[in-house]
Image 1 (cartoon, helix red, strand yellow):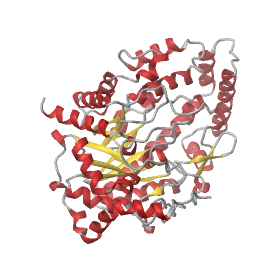
Image 2 (cartoon, helix red, strand yellow):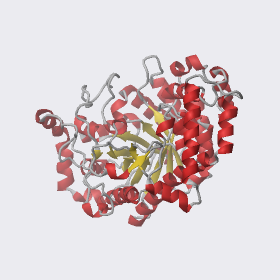
Image 3 (cartoon, helix red, strand yellow):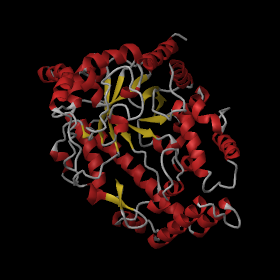
Image 4 (cartoon, helix red, strand yellow):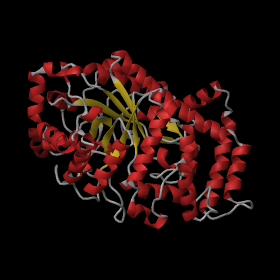
Length: 506
């Protein structure tokens, strides 16, 4: 059953703010054809971007928001959330957290639906079952049509952000979903399913053909089965019995690469038993790490199956880039590199910047330092509950930080409250730049107001200024203010702009 749309009275009030932008788009279509060469050059040759959803323009008005972003944040590039079913990129503030000092002060939790906030054109979705994805949240509003001419008039670039987050009631999803270890349908879509790949390339092609945008930013924060089994992340539970994917398309891809599907299934069944025993404090005779390594030695298919997922994810990224370049070679494609890349050594080992650089024009590398403390602490507690259960968690934190070349950060019990330092932003930016070797741009994602727990670090103007300054000082090609405008207090946005302008006079 789909989520109901907001009442008509509220919709009329909200849409008044966007009507001017829509009228301008229809009355002056030439605005879409403004040559890229006539747009303003980024500050100091660097692109200063911000992630923003349709709801912010509906709530506050296109012109007002764009002027505010430029004046306060020195923003010259918009990463406009155009496709997602997730509130993280597209909604207002998440429930339980204070609203920022702008926008409507009411939750959209009960009215948010998600989908495509632009206009899908049927000819691009012939080869996929995902044909009805138009977002109903804002009626007939096409957010790209509403924002693009106003952005161009201000010399701003505009990228459409698309995110691999779906909901189960979307028509066609049940046909394309992954299958877990127990044979159950999952809420994620199989990246080996040809119709899933056709959807992503069709969506990217549609947006780049139908609108004179500057390119695509693709979000896919999904991990492979090994990390999911161990909970080796910051934002997930430990779900060893629900690892994916074992659908017919994933099995076929495995067989084509010479992998034994049944041994992979048995290997993950053995890993599930290990994880569940660890969570119940049932210590193996030789200890947790030795037993884990023994599993990998006995069942090498565990790693091979994990690598199979990585290959699918990277292939989709490459196909999206190729599809966009077929529309116009000058269009750019970027990929969001999830936060776990920053503090998980296993993840780092399977996704090199050198490889990613070959598939992208730019990488948005997450270096969220305020929420980073909370996230890093959760990662340590997760892996400290299974593979490294024998290691005191404070010692595990120090060991892991040495592996990652982190500087002096807070101890585990203070980490969430302290956050990670600007030095962390500097080091991770430099690591990414060294990894891509000049083959693509590196645009660090800067944390401004990303929600955290009650006792965890909250972004301040000083924090924001220091993080922006650290990324630019490290040599970043620009940056992307994150997670979204509808979570940011204006004082923090102003601090980001001040840091950008300060960097130009040094």
